[in-house]
Length: 266
Image (cartoon, rainbow, N blue to C red):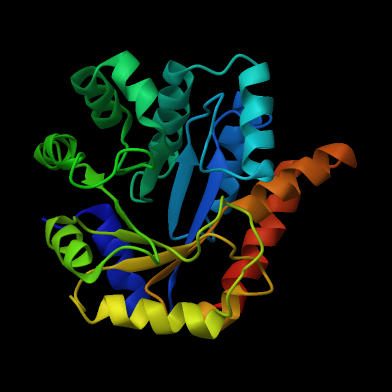
């Protein structure tokens, strides 16, 4: 039986477009607003990534750090993240949701307990940015046993031999980090060059779903739509920041932004 993530990619390929994958932080700016944002943008996004906040997000740029800080300042806990996911899944049982974060919180919770909570709340996949291959093999196996996708990461500096091993062991989605930077950085290389690198990786196993993340905005997304999927995160976190500063409703504003992003890749 195919996973919800695999089915989402199948649907996008039938429509001859990339999957739109959004990233927001759980609890930004409150637990209630975070839940409402997920519900709203799920009408346009094909796959949702939800970050569980961390006080030292080493891979994240200023925009996502700001989102995490807002969530943590309101007292968000890991149990609250699972509560948000569970409530979202009640309304959107078929929409794939991937949790993204750092291993320290999983370690503190205990791997088996964490995965149990993932399963009962309806999490479809995990991205753990500081648990690289091959150190993640045991945890990835535990995920697979529970029908939870573990998303492997590739970067421009990953060797071909290492790529082949990672791709072979991957589940239903692989995340290509387009540039060596924290999230939200401006693209240091052209979309054309990113796609050249992307296509080389894609040739290793054309059947695997390979998505591009880091530096994608409304200005660059159209030029990258040859990919299987495109992840937009920092731009959305920035939108929330700006809407709060302007005393606007972040739910309404983000809904319009994601709608416009979707239209750019149709």
